[in-house]
Length: 140
Image (cartoon, rainbow, N blue to C red):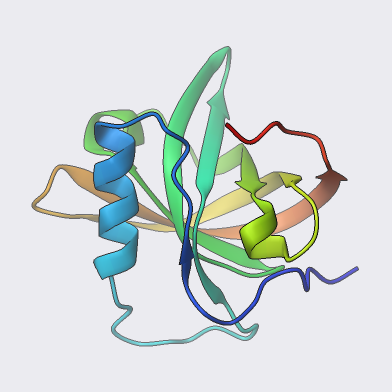
């Protein structure tokens, strides 16, 4: 199964949480990758992402996404909680899927982490497997 629900233009989505999430979303819009070594095309998508560590949910924002990988940003303090293997959820609104709301539950492996001077950390992760749940989330 291949994820083909995104359009190629960059669309921003705000979850309405403000503060750090808005900073993360801004960083994802302003970031550019230096060298692109990807095998699968990634789409520039700034969407809410939640990393689950034990009972804790860590908010983040995607910069780009494909069916094989994701790059997301989160606070530097929260990045210390991230381990090699991670579970996360990406919430895509209809503006991105061009259809219905969709929640993608993923299991991934962290490939690298990049610290920024703004207090945020970028995380590149390989997606090992995922499940798609359409109309699984309300849009506020």
